[in-house]
Length: 108
Image (cartoon, rainbow, N blue to C red):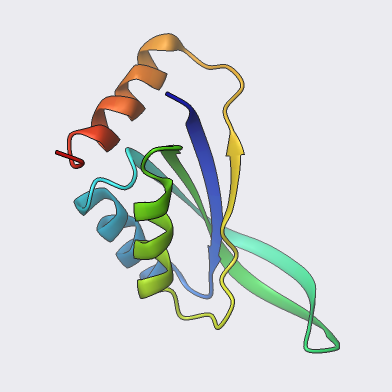
């Protein structure tokens, strides 16, 4: 099974924590790390913007990604949320197995 790390930014820590809890609750993620104090500079609707955000670093699997994306979009306040997934090319085997276990038992 392929382990993914998904990144998503939120405007505040309360919303980020609520989303993290929901992702764990529905088994879409094994772990969500919350990193406050992220500064984002981006172009939105033709203007350069700068925001202070909270970054979620979500550990999941390819098989659970669709469930994760749906749950994240449902609780996200942004019109177009950042949801980016990258493959974990390597990792401690026991940790990778744990991510798989935590995200597959909810599929049954």
